[in-house]
Image 1: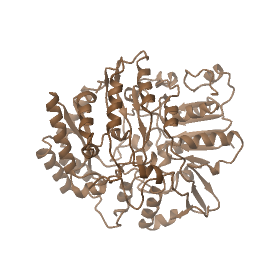
Image 2: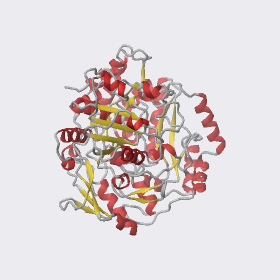
Image 3: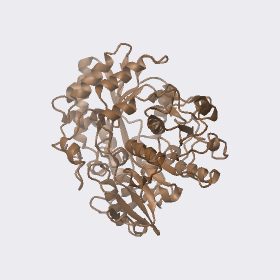
Image 4: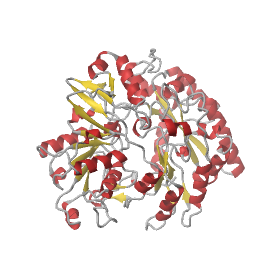
Length: 589
Protein backbone atom coordinates (compact mmCIF):
# COMPACT_ATOMS: atom_id res chain seq x y z
CA UNK A 1 0.00 0.00 0.00
CA UNK A 2 1.24 3.51 -0.74
CA UNK A 3 2.77 5.46 2.15
CA UNK A 4 0.73 8.44 1.03
CA UNK A 5 -2.71 8.20 2.67
CA UNK A 6 -3.87 11.23 0.66
CA UNK A 7 -2.91 10.24 -2.88
CA UNK A 8 -4.52 13.19 -4.65
CA UNK A 9 -1.83 15.59 -3.49
CA UNK A 10 1.65 16.68 -4.43
CA UNK A 11 4.51 14.94 -2.70
CA UNK A 12 5.57 17.17 0.20
CA UNK A 13 8.16 19.89 -0.20
CA UNK A 14 7.83 21.52 3.25
CA UNK A 15 7.71 20.46 6.90
CA UNK A 16 4.09 21.64 7.05
CA UNK A 17 3.07 19.22 4.29
CA UNK A 18 4.93 16.42 6.06
CA UNK A 19 2.95 17.16 9.25
CA UNK A 20 -0.32 17.06 7.27
CA UNK A 21 0.51 13.43 6.47
CA UNK A 22 1.59 12.67 10.01
CA UNK A 23 5.26 12.33 9.08
CA UNK A 24 8.08 13.55 11.30
CA UNK A 25 10.80 12.38 8.92
CA UNK A 26 11.22 11.23 5.31
CA UNK A 27 12.73 8.07 3.91
CA UNK A 28 13.94 9.84 0.78
CA UNK A 29 14.58 13.46 -0.20
CA UNK A 30 14.80 14.14 -3.94
CA UNK A 31 16.51 17.29 -5.23
CA UNK A 32 16.16 18.60 -8.78
CA UNK A 33 17.42 21.49 -10.90
CA UNK A 34 13.86 22.14 -12.11
CA UNK A 35 10.88 23.55 -10.29
CA UNK A 36 8.87 20.71 -8.75
CA UNK A 37 6.30 19.87 -11.41
CA UNK A 38 4.25 16.77 -10.66
CA UNK A 39 4.01 15.35 -14.16
CA UNK A 40 4.81 12.04 -15.90
CA UNK A 41 7.13 14.09 -18.13
CA UNK A 42 9.33 15.10 -15.19
CA UNK A 43 11.79 12.42 -14.15
CA UNK A 44 12.02 13.49 -10.51
CA UNK A 45 8.23 13.33 -10.14
CA UNK A 46 8.15 9.85 -11.68
CA UNK A 47 10.89 8.64 -9.32
CA UNK A 48 9.03 10.16 -6.38
CA UNK A 49 5.78 8.45 -7.32
CA UNK A 50 7.53 5.09 -7.84
CA UNK A 51 9.10 5.27 -4.38
CA UNK A 52 5.78 6.37 -2.89
CA UNK A 53 4.13 3.35 -4.50
CA UNK A 54 6.49 0.92 -2.74
CA UNK A 55 5.61 2.49 0.60
CA UNK A 56 8.36 5.06 1.18
CA UNK A 57 7.88 8.58 2.51
CA UNK A 58 9.23 10.90 -0.16
CA UNK A 59 9.76 14.65 -0.39
CA UNK A 60 10.97 16.81 -3.29
CA UNK A 61 13.01 20.02 -3.27
CA UNK A 62 13.01 21.92 -6.55
CA UNK A 63 15.86 24.34 -7.33
CA UNK A 64 17.23 24.84 -3.80
CA UNK A 65 18.96 28.12 -3.07
CA UNK A 66 22.67 27.30 -3.38
CA UNK A 67 23.74 30.32 -1.31
CA UNK A 68 22.12 29.22 1.95
CA UNK A 69 21.08 26.12 3.86
CA UNK A 70 17.40 27.09 4.12
CA UNK A 71 16.06 24.98 1.23
CA UNK A 72 18.36 22.01 1.57
CA UNK A 73 17.46 21.70 5.28
CA UNK A 74 13.77 22.49 5.13
CA UNK A 75 12.56 18.88 5.39
CA UNK A 76 15.44 17.51 7.41
CA UNK A 77 17.73 14.57 6.73
CA UNK A 78 16.15 11.48 5.10
CA UNK A 79 16.28 8.08 6.74
CA UNK A 80 17.37 6.06 3.66
CA UNK A 81 18.95 8.21 0.93
CA UNK A 82 19.18 11.49 -0.92
CA UNK A 83 18.35 11.49 -4.64
CA UNK A 84 20.00 14.21 -6.75
CA UNK A 85 19.21 15.21 -10.34
CA UNK A 86 20.39 18.17 -12.40
CA UNK A 87 16.90 18.34 -13.90
CA UNK A 88 15.14 17.40 -17.10
CA UNK A 89 17.86 19.07 -19.18
CA UNK A 90 21.61 18.94 -18.65
CA UNK A 91 22.38 22.09 -16.63
CA UNK A 92 25.20 23.17 -18.96
CA UNK A 93 22.98 22.79 -22.04
CA UNK A 94 20.24 24.64 -20.21
CA UNK A 95 22.54 27.49 -19.15
CA UNK A 96 24.66 28.04 -22.29
CA UNK A 97 24.24 28.35 -26.04
CA UNK A 98 26.34 26.46 -28.56
CA UNK A 99 28.82 29.34 -28.53
CA UNK A 100 28.91 29.30 -24.70
CA UNK A 101 26.86 32.45 -24.15
CA UNK A 102 24.72 32.41 -21.02
CA UNK A 103 21.00 31.83 -21.61
CA UNK A 104 18.83 34.38 -19.85
CA UNK A 105 15.68 32.27 -19.84
CA UNK A 106 14.83 28.86 -18.40
CA UNK A 107 11.55 27.14 -19.28
CA UNK A 108 11.72 24.99 -16.12
CA UNK A 109 12.09 27.91 -13.68
CA UNK A 110 9.14 29.89 -12.25
CA UNK A 111 9.03 33.29 -13.88
CA UNK A 112 11.30 32.09 -16.68
CA UNK A 113 14.44 33.95 -15.60
CA UNK A 114 17.53 31.75 -15.55
CA UNK A 115 18.72 32.40 -12.02
CA UNK A 116 17.88 29.21 -10.11
CA UNK A 117 19.80 26.43 -11.91
CA UNK A 118 23.55 26.34 -11.11
CA UNK A 119 26.15 25.16 -13.57
CA UNK A 120 26.88 21.45 -13.03
CA UNK A 121 23.81 21.29 -10.82
CA UNK A 122 24.31 17.63 -9.86
CA UNK A 123 27.73 18.42 -8.45
CA UNK A 124 26.58 21.58 -6.65
CA UNK A 125 23.62 19.90 -4.93
CA UNK A 126 25.71 16.93 -3.82
CA UNK A 127 28.34 19.27 -2.34
CA UNK A 128 25.58 21.14 -0.48
CA UNK A 129 24.38 17.92 1.14
CA UNK A 130 27.94 17.05 2.17
CA UNK A 131 28.44 20.55 3.60
CA UNK A 132 25.29 20.70 5.71
CA UNK A 133 24.78 17.04 6.65
CA UNK A 134 27.92 15.37 7.99
CA UNK A 135 28.16 11.58 7.77
CA UNK A 136 24.76 11.46 6.11
CA UNK A 137 22.89 8.61 4.43
CA UNK A 138 23.88 7.63 0.86
CA UNK A 139 23.65 10.21 -1.92
CA UNK A 140 22.34 8.73 -5.17
CA UNK A 141 22.66 10.53 -8.51
CA UNK A 142 20.15 10.18 -11.34
CA UNK A 143 18.80 12.03 -14.36
CA UNK A 144 20.26 12.76 -17.75
CA UNK A 145 23.10 14.99 -16.53
CA UNK A 146 24.57 12.21 -14.39
CA UNK A 147 23.58 9.30 -16.62
CA UNK A 148 25.54 10.55 -19.63
CA UNK A 149 28.60 11.34 -17.50
CA UNK A 150 28.88 7.98 -15.80
CA UNK A 151 32.25 7.14 -17.41
CA UNK A 152 35.11 9.31 -18.68
CA UNK A 153 33.41 11.83 -20.98
CA UNK A 154 34.20 14.85 -23.13
CA UNK A 155 32.94 18.06 -21.55
CA UNK A 156 32.46 20.78 -24.16
CA UNK A 157 32.22 23.63 -21.64
CA UNK A 158 35.66 22.98 -20.12
CA UNK A 159 36.97 21.48 -23.39
CA UNK A 160 38.50 18.44 -21.76
CA UNK A 161 37.86 14.87 -20.74
CA UNK A 162 36.40 14.70 -17.24
CA UNK A 163 36.35 11.81 -14.82
CA UNK A 164 33.16 9.82 -14.21
CA UNK A 165 30.77 12.10 -12.36
CA UNK A 166 30.75 9.97 -9.20
CA UNK A 167 34.39 10.98 -8.69
CA UNK A 168 33.71 14.69 -9.19
CA UNK A 169 30.61 14.73 -6.96
CA UNK A 170 31.74 12.23 -4.33
CA UNK A 171 28.24 10.75 -4.32
CA UNK A 172 27.79 7.14 -3.24
CA UNK A 173 25.80 5.65 -6.11
CA UNK A 174 24.29 6.53 -9.45
CA UNK A 175 21.26 5.11 -11.20
CA UNK A 176 21.71 5.45 -14.94
CA UNK A 177 19.25 5.40 -17.81
CA UNK A 178 15.52 5.64 -17.15
CA UNK A 179 15.99 3.75 -13.89
CA UNK A 180 12.41 2.69 -13.09
CA UNK A 181 13.29 -0.83 -11.95
CA UNK A 182 16.61 0.21 -10.45
CA UNK A 183 15.00 2.79 -8.16
CA UNK A 184 12.52 0.17 -6.91
CA UNK A 185 15.40 -2.24 -6.20
CA UNK A 186 17.40 0.51 -4.49
CA UNK A 187 14.52 1.62 -2.27
CA UNK A 188 13.72 -1.92 -1.18
CA UNK A 189 17.38 -2.83 -0.61
CA UNK A 190 18.17 0.19 1.58
CA UNK A 191 14.93 -0.19 3.52
CA UNK A 192 15.90 -3.78 4.32
CA UNK A 193 19.46 -2.80 5.30
CA UNK A 194 21.07 -4.45 2.27
CA UNK A 195 24.05 -3.55 0.08
CA UNK A 196 22.92 -1.91 -3.21
CA UNK A 197 26.06 -2.83 -5.15
CA UNK A 198 24.37 -5.84 -6.76
CA UNK A 199 21.60 -3.77 -8.36
CA UNK A 200 21.42 -3.67 -12.16
CA UNK A 201 21.38 -0.13 -13.58
CA UNK A 202 23.64 1.17 -10.80
CA UNK A 203 27.17 2.63 -10.74
CA UNK A 204 29.51 2.91 -7.78
CA UNK A 205 33.19 3.42 -6.92
CA UNK A 206 35.28 0.47 -5.77
CA UNK A 207 38.81 0.04 -4.45
CA UNK A 208 39.06 -3.23 -6.38
CA UNK A 209 38.10 -4.12 -9.98
CA UNK A 210 35.25 -6.47 -10.76
CA UNK A 211 37.14 -9.06 -12.77
CA UNK A 212 34.14 -10.59 -14.56
CA UNK A 213 33.13 -7.20 -15.99
CA UNK A 214 34.52 -5.74 -19.23
CA UNK A 215 37.74 -3.87 -18.46
CA UNK A 216 37.58 -0.63 -20.46
CA UNK A 217 40.37 1.92 -21.01
CA UNK A 218 41.36 3.79 -17.88
CA UNK A 219 40.75 7.51 -17.47
CA UNK A 220 44.47 8.16 -17.88
CA UNK A 221 44.65 6.06 -21.06
CA UNK A 222 41.81 8.13 -22.52
CA UNK A 223 43.69 11.33 -21.65
CA UNK A 224 46.87 10.00 -23.23
CA UNK A 225 45.37 8.59 -26.44
CA UNK A 226 42.24 9.75 -28.22
CA UNK A 227 41.74 6.38 -29.89
CA UNK A 228 41.46 4.80 -26.44
CA UNK A 229 38.63 7.20 -25.68
CA UNK A 230 36.88 6.05 -28.85
CA UNK A 231 37.30 2.44 -27.71
CA UNK A 232 35.81 3.32 -24.32
CA UNK A 233 32.84 5.09 -25.84
CA UNK A 234 32.05 2.28 -28.25
CA UNK A 235 32.01 -0.26 -25.42
CA UNK A 236 29.86 2.09 -23.34
CA UNK A 237 27.41 2.60 -26.21
CA UNK A 238 27.14 -1.09 -27.03
CA UNK A 239 26.39 -2.11 -23.45
CA UNK A 240 23.11 -0.33 -22.78
CA UNK A 241 20.77 -3.19 -23.65
CA UNK A 242 19.49 -5.27 -20.71
CA UNK A 243 19.16 -8.43 -22.81
CA UNK A 244 22.88 -9.07 -23.25
CA UNK A 245 24.97 -6.18 -21.89
CA UNK A 246 27.88 -6.79 -19.54
CA UNK A 247 29.02 -4.76 -16.58
CA UNK A 248 31.86 -2.29 -17.15
CA UNK A 249 34.93 -1.56 -15.01
CA UNK A 250 37.10 1.53 -15.53
CA UNK A 251 40.26 2.42 -13.65
CA UNK A 252 40.31 6.01 -12.40
CA UNK A 253 43.49 6.94 -10.53
CA UNK A 254 43.84 4.28 -7.83
CA UNK A 255 40.15 3.25 -7.79
CA UNK A 256 37.53 1.88 -10.18
CA UNK A 257 34.21 3.03 -11.58
CA UNK A 258 31.89 0.03 -11.65
CA UNK A 259 28.87 0.10 -13.96
CA UNK A 260 26.56 -2.85 -13.34
CA UNK A 261 24.62 -4.25 -16.32
CA UNK A 262 21.51 -2.27 -17.29
CA UNK A 263 18.26 -2.85 -15.42
CA UNK A 264 15.38 -4.44 -17.27
CA UNK A 265 13.10 -2.29 -19.41
CA UNK A 266 9.55 -1.80 -18.22
CA UNK A 267 6.99 -4.00 -19.97
CA UNK A 268 3.60 -2.68 -21.10
CA UNK A 269 1.93 -3.47 -17.78
CA UNK A 270 4.49 -1.51 -15.79
CA UNK A 271 4.57 1.33 -18.32
CA UNK A 272 0.82 1.66 -17.82
CA UNK A 273 1.18 1.59 -14.04
CA UNK A 274 3.79 4.36 -13.92
CA UNK A 275 1.73 6.53 -16.28
CA UNK A 276 -1.31 6.10 -14.02
CA UNK A 277 0.14 7.46 -10.78
CA UNK A 278 -1.82 10.40 -9.28
CA UNK A 279 0.23 13.19 -10.89
CA UNK A 280 -1.17 16.65 -10.21
CA UNK A 281 0.00 17.86 -13.66
CA UNK A 282 0.95 21.21 -12.23
CA UNK A 283 3.77 23.08 -10.54
CA UNK A 284 3.79 22.75 -6.76
CA UNK A 285 2.34 25.92 -5.17
CA UNK A 286 5.57 26.40 -3.18
CA UNK A 287 7.41 26.96 -6.49
CA UNK A 288 4.44 28.28 -8.45
CA UNK A 289 4.10 31.36 -6.24
CA UNK A 290 7.25 32.69 -7.94
CA UNK A 291 5.64 32.75 -11.38
CA UNK A 292 4.52 30.57 -14.28
CA UNK A 293 6.71 27.73 -15.52
CA UNK A 294 6.74 27.86 -19.31
CA UNK A 295 7.34 24.16 -19.97
CA UNK A 296 4.05 23.39 -18.24
CA UNK A 297 2.21 24.92 -21.21
CA UNK A 298 3.51 22.03 -23.33
CA UNK A 299 3.54 19.07 -20.95
CA UNK A 300 0.44 19.64 -18.82
CA UNK A 301 -1.93 18.13 -21.36
CA UNK A 302 0.47 15.93 -23.33
CA UNK A 303 0.61 12.15 -23.51
CA UNK A 304 3.80 10.09 -23.55
CA UNK A 305 3.00 6.96 -25.58
CA UNK A 306 6.35 5.17 -25.34
CA UNK A 307 10.01 5.29 -24.32
CA UNK A 308 13.12 4.65 -26.41
CA UNK A 309 14.30 5.40 -29.94
CA UNK A 310 16.23 3.33 -32.44
CA UNK A 311 16.86 6.20 -34.86
CA UNK A 312 20.40 6.58 -33.45
CA UNK A 313 21.21 10.07 -34.67
CA UNK A 314 24.85 10.46 -33.68
CA UNK A 315 24.27 13.84 -32.04
CA UNK A 316 21.39 12.58 -29.86
CA UNK A 317 21.76 11.11 -26.36
CA UNK A 318 18.42 9.27 -26.29
CA UNK A 319 19.96 5.96 -27.36
CA UNK A 320 22.41 5.99 -24.44
CA UNK A 321 19.88 7.23 -21.87
CA UNK A 322 16.45 5.85 -22.81
CA UNK A 323 17.66 2.92 -24.87
CA UNK A 324 17.18 1.66 -28.43
CA UNK A 325 14.19 -0.60 -27.79
CA UNK A 326 10.65 0.81 -27.87
CA UNK A 327 8.55 0.23 -24.75
CA UNK A 328 4.91 1.13 -25.32
CA UNK A 329 1.89 1.79 -23.21
CA UNK A 330 -1.36 0.05 -24.04
CA UNK A 331 -3.99 1.84 -26.09
CA UNK A 332 -6.47 1.40 -23.25
CA UNK A 333 -4.19 3.16 -20.78
CA UNK A 334 -3.45 6.03 -23.17
CA UNK A 335 -7.15 6.54 -23.93
CA UNK A 336 -7.90 6.50 -20.19
CA UNK A 337 -5.39 9.33 -19.72
CA UNK A 338 -6.93 11.33 -22.58
CA UNK A 339 -10.41 10.88 -21.07
CA UNK A 340 -9.07 12.00 -17.69
CA UNK A 341 -7.98 15.30 -19.25
CA UNK A 342 -11.63 16.13 -19.97
CA UNK A 343 -12.39 16.04 -16.22
CA UNK A 344 -9.73 18.65 -15.36
CA UNK A 345 -11.10 22.15 -14.85
CA UNK A 346 -8.67 24.13 -17.02
CA UNK A 347 -8.55 21.64 -19.93
CA UNK A 348 -9.73 23.42 -23.10
CA UNK A 349 -10.06 20.34 -25.29
CA UNK A 350 -6.53 20.56 -26.73
CA UNK A 351 -3.97 17.80 -26.23
CA UNK A 352 -0.58 19.42 -26.89
CA UNK A 353 1.21 16.24 -27.93
CA UNK A 354 0.66 12.52 -28.38
CA UNK A 355 4.08 10.97 -28.85
CA UNK A 356 7.50 10.08 -27.54
CA UNK A 357 11.14 10.59 -28.47
CA UNK A 358 10.04 9.72 -32.03
CA UNK A 359 6.26 9.84 -32.29
CA UNK A 360 5.85 7.34 -35.13
CA UNK A 361 7.83 4.54 -33.48
CA UNK A 362 4.81 3.73 -31.31
CA UNK A 363 3.34 0.25 -31.54
CA UNK A 364 5.96 -1.88 -33.31
CA UNK A 365 9.46 -3.23 -32.80
CA UNK A 366 11.93 -5.61 -34.42
CA UNK A 367 11.01 -9.10 -33.23
CA UNK A 368 14.63 -10.19 -33.38
CA UNK A 369 15.68 -7.27 -31.18
CA UNK A 370 12.98 -7.98 -28.61
CA UNK A 371 14.36 -11.50 -28.22
CA UNK A 372 18.12 -11.02 -28.64
CA UNK A 373 18.64 -7.32 -27.87
CA UNK A 374 19.92 -4.51 -30.07
CA UNK A 375 22.48 -5.32 -32.71
CA UNK A 376 26.13 -4.35 -32.16
CA UNK A 377 29.19 -4.11 -34.42
CA UNK A 378 27.89 -0.90 -36.04
CA UNK A 379 24.64 -2.54 -37.21
CA UNK A 380 21.73 -0.12 -36.92
CA UNK A 381 17.99 -0.34 -37.46
CA UNK A 382 18.23 2.61 -39.85
CA UNK A 383 21.18 4.37 -41.43
CA UNK A 384 21.83 6.85 -44.21
CA UNK A 385 21.02 4.32 -46.91
CA UNK A 386 18.29 1.95 -45.79
CA UNK A 387 16.06 0.53 -43.10
CA UNK A 388 17.10 -2.89 -41.80
CA UNK A 389 14.95 -5.54 -43.45
CA UNK A 390 14.04 -7.12 -40.10
CA UNK A 391 12.53 -3.84 -38.84
CA UNK A 392 8.97 -4.00 -40.16
CA UNK A 393 7.65 -0.45 -39.92
CA UNK A 394 3.91 -0.48 -39.27
CA UNK A 395 1.94 2.68 -38.51
CA UNK A 396 -1.44 0.91 -38.28
CA UNK A 397 -1.58 0.75 -34.48
CA UNK A 398 -0.58 4.41 -34.26
CA UNK A 399 -3.27 5.42 -36.77
CA UNK A 400 -5.96 3.63 -34.76
CA UNK A 401 -4.76 5.21 -31.52
CA UNK A 402 -4.93 8.73 -32.96
CA UNK A 403 -8.39 8.09 -34.41
CA UNK A 404 -9.64 6.74 -31.09
CA UNK A 405 -8.28 9.74 -29.18
CA UNK A 406 -10.05 12.25 -31.39
CA UNK A 407 -13.34 10.38 -30.96
CA UNK A 408 -13.34 11.02 -27.20
CA UNK A 409 -16.07 13.52 -26.23
CA UNK A 410 -14.44 16.75 -25.07
CA UNK A 411 -11.30 16.35 -27.20
CA UNK A 412 -11.25 19.09 -29.83
CA UNK A 413 -7.72 18.53 -31.13
CA UNK A 414 -4.85 16.17 -30.37
CA UNK A 415 -1.58 17.45 -31.79
CA UNK A 416 1.46 15.33 -32.56
CA UNK A 417 4.25 17.75 -31.70
CA UNK A 418 6.98 15.18 -30.96
CA UNK A 419 9.57 14.44 -33.60
CA UNK A 420 8.41 12.30 -36.52
CA UNK A 421 10.80 10.28 -38.70
CA UNK A 422 9.70 10.99 -42.24
CA UNK A 423 11.92 8.19 -43.58
CA UNK A 424 9.79 5.68 -41.66
CA UNK A 425 6.66 7.09 -43.26
CA UNK A 426 8.06 6.62 -46.76
CA UNK A 427 9.38 3.17 -45.80
CA UNK A 428 5.95 1.93 -44.66
CA UNK A 429 4.44 1.08 -48.06
CA UNK A 430 1.27 -0.32 -46.51
CA UNK A 431 0.32 2.30 -43.91
CA UNK A 432 2.73 5.24 -44.30
CA UNK A 433 0.46 7.22 -46.62
CA UNK A 434 -2.55 6.69 -44.35
CA UNK A 435 -0.56 7.76 -41.30
CA UNK A 436 0.57 10.97 -42.95
CA UNK A 437 -2.99 11.63 -44.12
CA UNK A 438 -4.22 11.23 -40.54
CA UNK A 439 -1.55 13.72 -39.45
CA UNK A 440 -2.29 16.23 -42.19
CA UNK A 441 -6.05 16.07 -41.71
CA UNK A 442 -6.23 16.08 -37.92
CA UNK A 443 -2.99 16.37 -35.91
CA UNK A 444 -0.98 19.38 -37.07
CA UNK A 445 -1.81 23.07 -37.13
CA UNK A 446 -0.52 25.02 -40.10
CA UNK A 447 2.88 23.41 -40.17
CA UNK A 448 4.64 20.14 -39.55
CA UNK A 449 8.16 20.06 -38.14
CA UNK A 450 10.68 17.59 -39.55
CA UNK A 451 14.37 17.21 -38.85
CA UNK A 452 16.54 16.52 -41.90
CA UNK A 453 19.35 18.45 -40.10
CA UNK A 454 21.33 18.65 -43.36
CA UNK A 455 21.28 17.53 -47.00
CA UNK A 456 24.95 16.85 -47.76
CA UNK A 457 25.51 13.09 -47.96
CA UNK A 458 28.91 13.48 -46.33
CA UNK A 459 27.53 15.39 -43.34
CA UNK A 460 24.45 13.17 -43.08
CA UNK A 461 26.76 10.17 -42.89
CA UNK A 462 28.51 11.64 -39.85
CA UNK A 463 25.14 12.55 -38.32
CA UNK A 464 23.68 9.08 -38.87
CA UNK A 465 20.74 10.55 -40.78
CA UNK A 466 18.95 9.35 -43.96
CA UNK A 467 19.84 10.75 -47.39
CA UNK A 468 18.14 13.75 -48.95
CA UNK A 469 16.15 11.73 -51.50
CA UNK A 470 13.99 10.45 -48.67
CA UNK A 471 13.16 14.04 -47.74
CA UNK A 472 12.25 14.84 -51.36
CA UNK A 473 9.93 11.83 -51.53
CA UNK A 474 8.32 12.75 -48.22
CA UNK A 475 7.74 16.36 -49.23
CA UNK A 476 5.97 15.25 -52.40
CA UNK A 477 3.68 13.00 -50.36
CA UNK A 478 3.01 15.79 -47.85
CA UNK A 479 2.26 18.37 -50.53
CA UNK A 480 -0.08 15.94 -52.33
CA UNK A 481 -2.04 15.18 -49.17
CA UNK A 482 -2.42 18.86 -48.32
CA UNK A 483 -3.69 19.56 -51.82
CA UNK A 484 -6.18 16.70 -51.57
CA UNK A 485 -7.36 17.98 -48.19
CA UNK A 486 -7.66 21.55 -49.42
CA UNK A 487 -5.26 22.76 -46.75
CA UNK A 488 -2.35 25.17 -46.94
CA UNK A 489 0.02 23.64 -44.42
CA UNK A 490 3.77 23.84 -44.58
CA UNK A 491 6.85 21.94 -43.52
CA UNK A 492 9.42 23.55 -41.23
CA UNK A 493 12.87 22.07 -40.98
CA UNK A 494 15.34 21.61 -38.14
CA UNK A 495 18.84 22.26 -39.49
CA UNK A 496 22.27 21.97 -37.86
CA UNK A 497 25.43 23.94 -38.65
CA UNK A 498 29.02 23.07 -37.72
CA UNK A 499 28.46 19.38 -37.01
CA UNK A 500 31.73 17.37 -37.26
CA UNK A 501 32.51 16.85 -40.94
CA UNK A 502 30.61 20.00 -41.98
CA UNK A 503 32.45 22.77 -43.84
CA UNK A 504 31.28 26.05 -45.37
CA UNK A 505 30.84 24.35 -48.74
CA UNK A 506 28.34 21.92 -47.24
CA UNK A 507 26.31 24.81 -45.83
CA UNK A 508 26.28 26.47 -49.26
CA UNK A 509 24.99 23.18 -50.71
CA UNK A 510 22.32 23.10 -48.01
CA UNK A 511 21.26 26.64 -48.87
CA UNK A 512 20.99 25.73 -52.55
CA UNK A 513 18.92 22.67 -51.73
CA UNK A 514 16.47 24.51 -49.50
CA UNK A 515 16.03 27.23 -52.12
CA UNK A 516 15.63 25.08 -55.22
CA UNK A 517 14.31 21.75 -53.98
CA UNK A 518 12.32 22.75 -50.89
CA UNK A 519 11.29 26.15 -52.28
CA UNK A 520 11.85 27.94 -48.97
CA UNK A 521 14.26 30.15 -47.07
CA UNK A 522 15.10 28.69 -43.65
CA UNK A 523 14.38 30.98 -40.70
CA UNK A 524 16.01 28.79 -38.08
CA UNK A 525 19.12 26.68 -37.70
CA UNK A 526 21.16 25.71 -34.66
CA UNK A 527 24.86 25.38 -34.12
CA UNK A 528 25.86 21.88 -33.06
CA UNK A 529 26.45 21.28 -29.34
CA UNK A 530 28.62 18.25 -28.47
CA UNK A 531 26.77 16.75 -25.50
CA UNK A 532 28.08 13.84 -23.40
CA UNK A 533 26.88 10.38 -24.34
CA UNK A 534 26.89 10.94 -28.12
CA UNK A 535 29.07 9.74 -30.96
CA UNK A 536 29.09 13.28 -32.37
CA UNK A 537 30.75 14.59 -29.20
CA UNK A 538 33.41 11.90 -29.62
CA UNK A 539 33.96 13.12 -33.19
CA UNK A 540 34.20 16.71 -31.99
CA UNK A 541 36.82 15.95 -29.36
CA UNK A 542 38.96 13.45 -31.26
CA UNK A 543 38.53 14.92 -34.77
CA UNK A 544 38.28 11.31 -35.91
CA UNK A 545 35.44 9.26 -37.36
CA UNK A 546 34.85 6.85 -34.43
CA UNK A 547 33.75 4.06 -36.77
CA UNK A 548 36.82 4.19 -39.04
CA UNK A 549 39.23 6.27 -36.90
CA UNK A 550 40.01 8.36 -39.97
CA UNK A 551 40.62 12.10 -39.67
CA UNK A 552 37.60 14.39 -40.19
CA UNK A 553 37.22 18.16 -40.28
CA UNK A 554 35.76 19.73 -37.13
CA UNK A 555 35.01 23.43 -36.90
CA UNK A 556 35.88 24.67 -33.40
CA UNK A 557 36.14 28.45 -33.89
CA UNK A 558 32.93 30.00 -32.47
CA UNK A 559 32.90 32.80 -35.05
CA UNK A 560 33.24 30.33 -37.91
CA UNK A 561 30.46 28.18 -36.45
CA UNK A 562 28.16 31.19 -36.53
CA UNK A 563 29.32 31.92 -40.07
CA UNK A 564 28.23 28.42 -41.13
CA UNK A 565 24.81 29.07 -39.64
CA UNK A 566 24.51 32.46 -41.36
CA UNK A 567 25.16 30.90 -44.77
CA UNK A 568 21.74 29.27 -44.45
CA UNK A 569 20.02 31.71 -42.10
CA UNK A 570 21.28 35.29 -42.64
CA UNK A 571 20.99 37.56 -39.62
CA UNK A 572 18.00 39.36 -41.15
CA UNK A 573 16.09 36.06 -41.44
CA UNK A 574 17.05 35.15 -37.88
CA UNK A 575 15.66 38.44 -36.59
CA UNK A 576 12.42 37.91 -38.51
CA UNK A 577 12.05 34.42 -37.05
CA UNK A 578 12.68 35.71 -33.53
CA UNK A 579 10.10 38.47 -33.98
CA UNK A 580 7.51 35.96 -35.20
CA UNK A 581 8.23 33.68 -32.27
CA UNK A 582 7.80 36.53 -29.80
CA UNK A 583 4.58 37.72 -31.40
CA UNK A 584 3.06 34.21 -31.26
CA UNK A 585 4.31 33.42 -27.75
CA UNK A 586 1.74 31.53 -25.71
CA UNK A 587 -0.46 30.58 -28.67
CA UNK A 588 -1.44 26.94 -29.11
CA UNK A 589 0.03 25.07 -32.08
